[in-house]
Image (tube, rainbow over the protein chains, first blue to last red):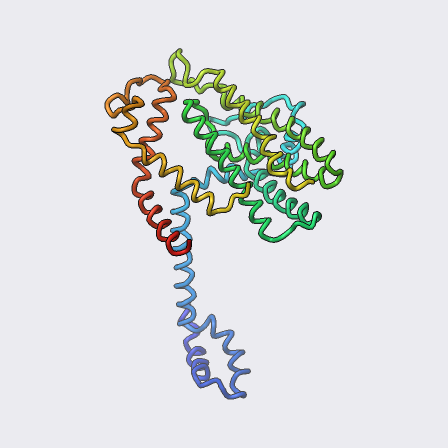
Length: 281
Length: 82
């Protein structure tokens, strides 16, 4: 059908199309006919359709390969946020002392998306906070005239490496001490990325108010973040998933789990100080 | 502490090599793993030592072939580019 209509006009246009188009009188009429030719020339049409089918095949193959390594649905769960959730979560991160209910609500065995439950971890805030932190680090170094483009890359990879180390250490600890929790790797990345909000706050106060402002903001955000981490992880680690275990308890004793939670909380202000102190002199 | 990508890759390769090099007979039996006494507790609390030994054994099994490839590639690259 696509080829039938245009055969006659394609024949007539092809005549002028294949003449050597070096003469000056030729091109204007060629151009007007050429634009129509792109969709009426059967060879170009076939090429376009072949290319688009090839692109579709490539896209399917890439999707299949990626979904073998990490499930895209699980990742989509973490990015299903809306504005109200982000605002409430940021407020909780900075001032968690008035938040009452820390339980992650479930809906028939699947956790609710962040849109419906303010306690659910998400990956949107950590990602945005990470990028903002890198930009802010560049700004801070530029104000002190210590900026060069390599510093940005170095800062980004250092921060990413620390996140990776922390997530790996947490996973290793949870595995070795047989703590059966439903914390997946993405959950740990999310909880580990919440410290970037505190880092941004500290660096901003350090830039605006000098060294005193930096230490005051560091103290405030450290306490808030420690409280947040302890309350959030307590729900996930300390409640044992005792659906099929016998009375001898599943896995580690509660003291060990408390140690893990507190150690994770103590680690946060240390790493905040380590990653931001060189930005604020 | 500045982490470049190369130093991260180097750290990962060295750590995995270190775990894969632990020899079963000469070393791990002395510590008390052994191939025959690995599965003692079927209960729900395996204990940290058997978890560590499990981890070592599984790392050795999975990463043997990729480690050969990665080590050869890094040796060639280091010889070529210093």
